[in-house]
Structure formats: structure tokens, C-alpha cells
Image (cartoon, rainbow, N blue to C red; front, side, top):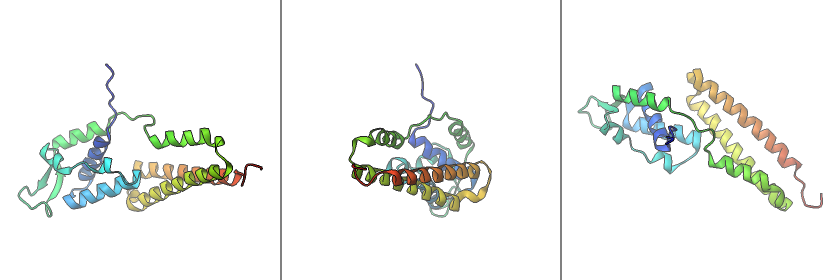
Length: 184
């Protein structure tokens, strides 16, 4: 039987948490805030992704408080050896080619856009443009918040920003080319 070795949304949050803690230990509150901000900047707000608990990482022995007897609000979390193994497993998991439902919805909108009256075509094109602008703004915010570290993440982020800018320019031209009414 084929086993899908790609990450689930929950595992993606675990990867983010373990990576943040491995990169720079911090208090529970600081790590939780950083994870929430990072994920939101990439995906937008998502209860599905943000519902996971870091306490579970401690129960599973993947992170620990230092010092162990410190109150949760002052103790720093650090990754354990088991946590490093789990981080490696998550970082080396397969990727899905395209699991983003919004990509499918976008493709379907373009595929059948011609079936709508011009006014609705324009409204849908502007909605797609607004979504692209939101995506670009999220990426620019991510660069302001995390892009100063350089390396592969900064390179990937620069590529994503370039692609988002190109997509936005294409959508702007597409919107401009839609006639005002069906007679045109």
C-alpha cells in the first residue's frame, strides 16, 4: 500500500515550532507568538494550522523548559535530542506538488470566467487581483519580519515576491482588458 509521506497541517506547525525553538530558544509566549506570526504571514489566518499545542511537544519530550522548575512564563524552551530527530524527519518529508485548494478554485474561475456577464467577469478578476495583492503584502511583511537572516529562506522569499509581483502585473493587465459590457 502506498504511504503518503507528505506533511499534514499539524506536522507543518510542529516543524515550525521545533525549527523556531532549535534556531533560537525562547519563552513559551515568545515562541507561540513567533509561530503564529510566521504561519499567518505565509498562509493567512488559519484555525486549522494554529490549533496545535506546544505543551504536546513537551509531553512528547521534543522540547523542554530550562530551567525545568521555572514558571512557564519565564522558562525558555529548548529542543531535545528527540526533538532534533523529529525536526529532521519533518524537514526531510516529501512535498505535495500542489495541495492548495485556492489554486484549484482560481483555475476553475479562469476556466469558466467566459460564462459570466462582463460585469461579473470584471468583479471576479478584481477579486483575484485583491487576493494576489494580499498575498504579496503578506510576503513583503514576511521579508520585513524574517528576511534579514539571509540564506535559503531569504532567497526563496525573494523568488516568491518576484512571482507574486509578476502575477499581480498580469492580473492588472487582465482586468484592464475586460470590456465594460458584453457589447464590446
